[in-house]
Image (cartoon, rainbow, N blue to C red):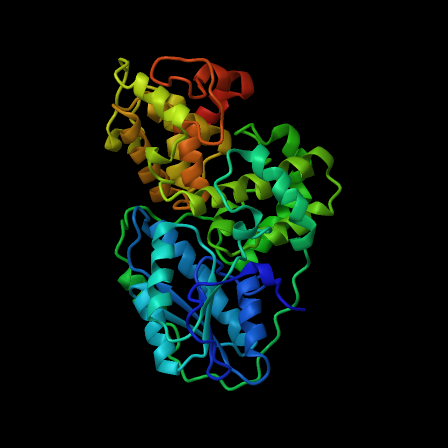
Length: 447
């Protein structure tokens, strides 16, 4: 079975494609062995005669990322290396600027082609663009993150879920197909050094005070987590997923973020459960809302700036920029959960302690940062810094889009005008108390 041709996008079409030389899969966003369209395509190109090499290049520092995310990533990559070894596909880990390192590897082994993952974020696009210009062979992108490839579902920034939903649904069953099995290779691979995991840990140059959390990392743990959700919690998703005290959410976002679990695999497993409203509601979040985020980041490079906000929202925020604030806090005060609101502090503590914050609280948390910051720009900066520092699924399209939805009306509509918020959707503690037992949540996370 071949990989769907529309998942494939050549990043440097002017370069030659060689039938000789090894195939490199430059693993980036999709850090797994099974259910990986890019790896399957690289294996397809290798065939029976050409060796396939998988390479991951670790940049020692990334924006607001912390040791927590690097530790989760490296533990998962160790499992990737072990699983690839079982099917005779070598894995090499390089440390440094990803664009430079992948070009160096391609030159060292005289590669015939390089395959990589789709990623709409600026830093990855920059690496890919630089590598594409320096490589002597084709660099081919395969979208294994979205069920309907982001470049195919729409050629423009979509206004909201209601505009992208019919486009996804029209194509969904063309792309929502079962994955073929990844075949072992028989070709003799080039001689490459084994990954030096200790060196990788030593090279990490980020905030090491944000420690790892208990959540198990890796492809095996991800599949167990999916099975647990399907068996134990999916049935309650429609009714209870908005209650932060209930164990009704999937908590699969870290595995999706690090590519340890394919969203397509999740959709395939959920779609056959017959779980009614819960199934439909979950698939809406997994497919439509998540792919809407990739669409926005692909088509708007201001995804982490108020320049990316819709005009009506930016204008409304400007109109209320000088409204008096009852409370204002610094980044450090927010970070240390030192606000007057014990509910907000509880949400911050949940994120700091577990690397996860319940989705409903994540909205409340972000909107209050807008209300208690000196400006919308400062609020957005605080949200992104804290989200990317503590959340295991930080530094993601979903995170950036969620931030802009919360404080700048992205993919939303104008609401009744209020001080500070303007026409941005409002949330307060009273609304939380109508939704769930706030004191129970506070008691759990404000110890």
